[in-house]
Length: 359
Image (cartoon, rainbow, N blue to C red; front, side, top):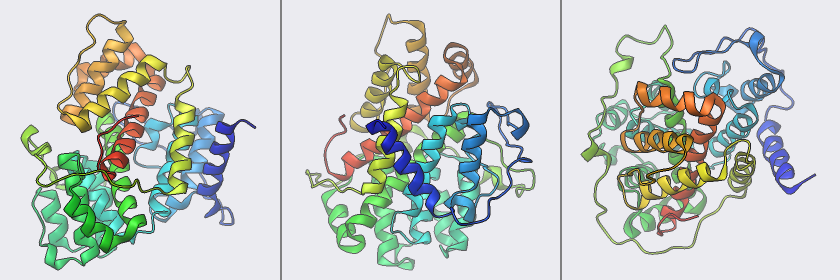
């Protein structure tokens, strides 16, 4: 078995271990939802898609999600990579060492930063169930600083870490020192990675314009208002110096397995991976992102326009989406989004270490 395949097997085995002894949930009658990516039904899926669907439903996330709602309908367009992506999500969420309240706070911060309405709809409920105060949830939705005194020191630190990472793309020395003392290395790293991971999930949901369920409250679609370009990015206040990188072996294995598979040339050609990587680095190091390639092949030009619009505005218009699907096809477009999301997580790790993003 090759190194990449061995890594993949280890990641998937870790993600499925928690439910290996549990009774399997049925998936044959699942009808997925979607908008730009049509909702798939089990009966029309390929064997590879059915495997991914089974691994998605019968996994650790079954505690909150038994129907594969969320980003998975989109990821099924590239089922082998989608399977590694859902395994990564399980690893990040359930091997983090964070309490449910801390995990959901970091998730809400990412959903707010990306105005991801379905992510907010789903996780605001989970956050409330975990005990996050209504006033704090409302403040995050309104893009206001919550009453940090109403939170525990760990929760206040998690808010400061995610706020800085999401809106300045850096983490100041002062915030880092406080969070390290309050959260410890593992939970500090997990807080940053969960926020970056849910930025990636928001990319998928926003590109699809993923619909709320039919029984959602009438005002759910209006829970978040889009943030202005000025609100999306502010200057860092305080010094930022290099720090020792923090690592979680489970997360590293999952990220490496995803990177290895998506780096297969047939899945996403090297020029497109280079393009996505460079755009995400610019997004973290020197935003906003601008198209700079000039005369290049059409597929690369279309991919660049798609990625630039998504990173700068947190969504893509109908024309941009239609051109991207026509030029790349659904599978390669999904792989491009996945690579953007993977690169975003890697940049968050660099910011946590107090250095510019580089690969």
